[in-house]
Image (cartoon, rainbow, N blue to C red; front, side, top):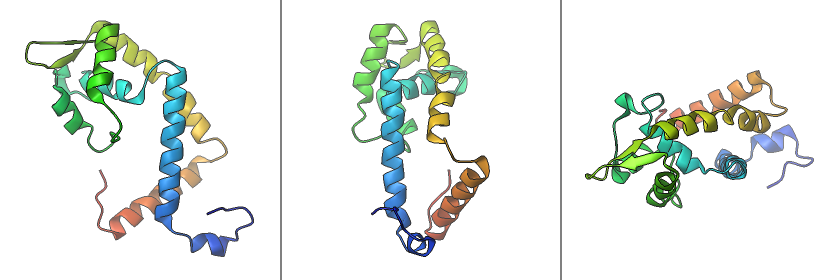
Length: 155
């Protein structure tokens, strides 16, 4: 499907599922390529975030790979191998593990998380280029209503 020379009426008849899928894949691909250029992967960043008491982890408790997979179940992709990604972070000294297989973020891992997070605004700015905040908010509200209309859950 293409939008070149497509009227508003023709666009209104096009399937939302197709376009949301295309947008999802394009945005994920772009985000991951930007992060790769900076020397890290999205799953590595998620691991650090989920283990940091200063981010997603309540109390900064250690977690096993299965617990991390469960915690990330709403956004992890099928091709993401958290065990392999954690190994990289263990080698970098950003994570450590205990005898029970729980992963813990290290002080250098926390410093890395903070540094990696600083790249998010520039990546977001590229994705949002040419889109004003009002249009973006309207788009999200429309998508949320479509989710409600189809019995989905907003998280």
